[in-house]
Image (cartoon, rainbow, N blue to C red):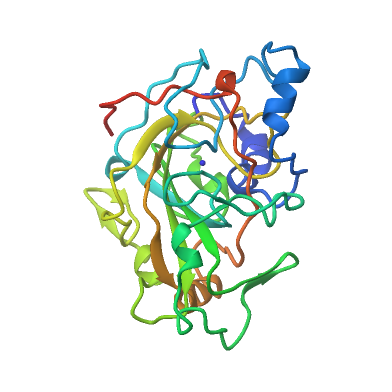
Length: 293
């Protein structure tokens, strides 16, 4: 999931991938956004003065945040700098509308794909070993994940943490996240996550993922921020990010995700938690028809 100037040493340490996909922070209740809005008597939320926040319902275009920044270039004109995944979708959409629950600290919350409720017994067969295990548990067939391909305008190469998106030559790069929501299935005929990773591909001088899904609907483009459960309506992200979120779920082979977690250029070995959906209009940008890139 930034036009602010970064402090040289602090930037890499503070704005790590945790800014995009933190394992920490306290999860607010499902309707905390409306409750907070009411608590302030309909006035601006606690983090007034911050730019538009993410995640959001991508089917709702309304937003009242007044801080505007230029959207980043097309991802093909930027450098891939990081890939990571979240358990459950951080965003909400028509294809992934099922609320996963309140959860705790960003886990067991977020949204799930509708198709996850209609899988075959074969697709739901248990895996031979735990997939991408962590202290918060492992992934299993039927789970939903949201994958983020992070791109930077800086002259960088892919690597671990958001620090890989920064450069000594460019302290305030544009950031762009291409996002896709998947349902995990135990099916070798489903998408192979390793074909969507990074193997050193360079196109027209730009570092690129091996592939990013192009058949899951026209991406919804909007201005937002970084995500992860560190942030809430009262603790907002200060970073500015262009988001491109695909509206349709896709099935992906869970065994290929397991293989990716065992070794990749980003040192990612588990799924991160989610930030609660942002619904307060003052914290959202307006999604405009016809926006390009």
